[in-house]
Image (cartoon, rainbow, N blue to C red; front, top):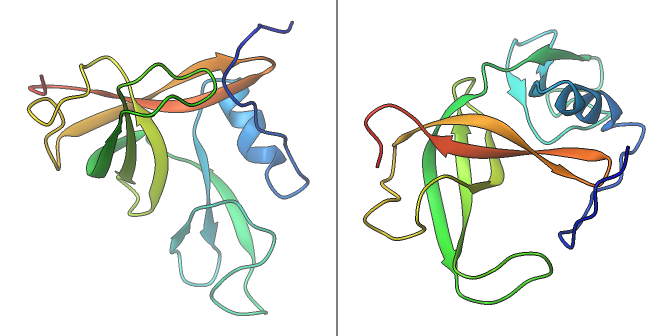
Length: 138
């Protein structure tokens, strides 16, 4: 079932399909090197750790911390300013670009290293990971 949205809707590729299959189930999946055990994000078909290395898909905890952010005051399709564009450091150690939801996007509310939890925003037929502050975060 399709949901109307003005926000951009990503398109899955062969390399990213397992990621998007996970988000559709409300799960965040990332890749891990079979040789080193290091986690990898963004989804890719080749390991960055060597040509003889294979990547496997594993479910992330969905927990992370706010690593960096910018508060955008410029309108973008589907986004009403101000909104927070963030780099989230996942518990597994990789970083991903996302949005922060559930809190006013002000410097007072967006404290670096604050705990975050993934949730999913429906855009058309896609579920997009966004992050919400948890615990003692404002």
